[in-house]
Figure 1 (cartoon, rainbow, N blue to C red):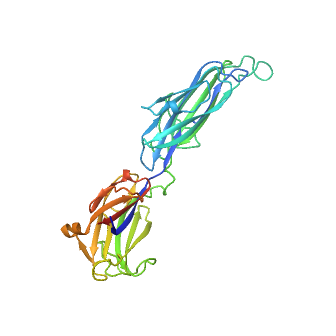
Figure 2: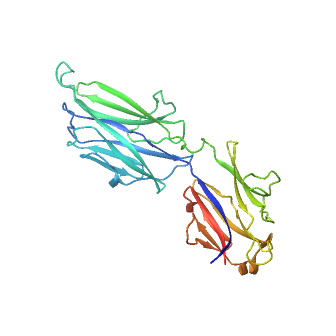
Figure 3: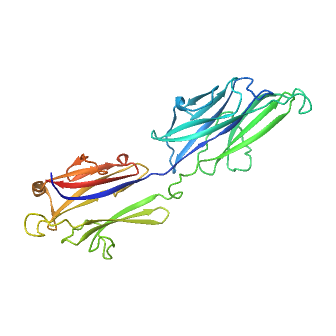
Length: 352
């Protein structure tokens, strides 16, 4: 079928970036004097994630974790805790690669590394018989990344809840000689993802229209919030989209469509057909949520055509990203944020 007129619009999804944090991303297991694991040992790490100021769902497929021979892992979905266990067959340190799936679709690989501490040899290099009798790992949330918190330590991992908090891990190694050694590690609460400044959300989107005489330079007249129609060839319908951010800054983008070419039948210029697309809720989604209704307005000789008159001209069909198969038929098309992977171009064609 012949295409009598067409127009297109770009729909964008501005999704905040994800940040993923391991509360314990490295650990040293106790080994014998040769640096081999003398008995099976385990440690844990809690996986935390943020997307902007939202907490995404976290899942880990234990079968897809990459780890050295002799190392086993187990995933506790209720606490987002991964347990790493080394057996006596492990003779050297290594890394464990953890594919973390966020919101069921985004995968970020996190790396946990481990080493093996040799037991001190008898004699001049250490106290005779000074072996490791036990290792105790404890956790506590603090408000400083440099000063150890003074509250109660927990043997179970605890989670930070807001930026400005820090998860401290205290490792106490008890030696057979009766002495102890204490070490600390600290991890900050995950920051907002790299896309967009922190707190820079979208407060509103304004779509405006104006007819101009150039297809490359935006017109300088008065913009209208309602679609306007070009009347003659040589005119262009400009669409201006203004995005206002909560930070106080704005971003402005333009799109332009030319007045429909003169029809091949009828009086020259009298049967010119133009399609202009409007969006009920703008053409910008945030964080993969929301929807908008695209409406194709058909103009003939400068007057919008609807109802039976539109049916007589032809059928409006919608195409996505240059595809050859229509994704919808009719004057309107509902687009959900889940239909858009960062950006999608929708084209309305009047075919007949």
